[in-house]
Length: 140
Image (cartoon, rainbow, N blue to C red):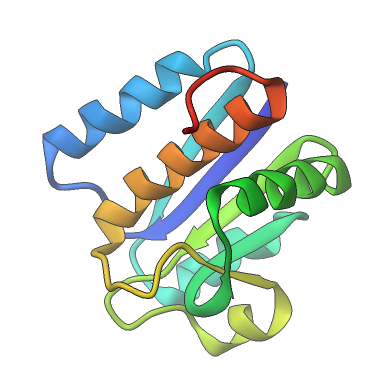
């Protein structure tokens, strides 16, 4: 089973986002286990990340890729990380420099999203990557 942790600043305030993310969690149940942790500050986020091994930071300056490229990237990271991945999402001010300098950077879009909405975009892209990896019809 693949274990994915999503670390971010601030909790989701919108119930519809939790509902939407829950739909993807349900679709991947038994194959991917998600854990979401929230930090109140950059310092707390850094402490949470330091305990992780395979870390990908979401940042506008990160590498952009289309969904098939992300699927390949995701599969490689899962293999490298022993089926454990951690995605890190910063707050309104972005990620601390120390995290950007230490870990892989990924951009999901050149557009600006709230840290709440990008969680949903990330989870949907993980689902899409998984379906591409397994040959499940979803990606068109």
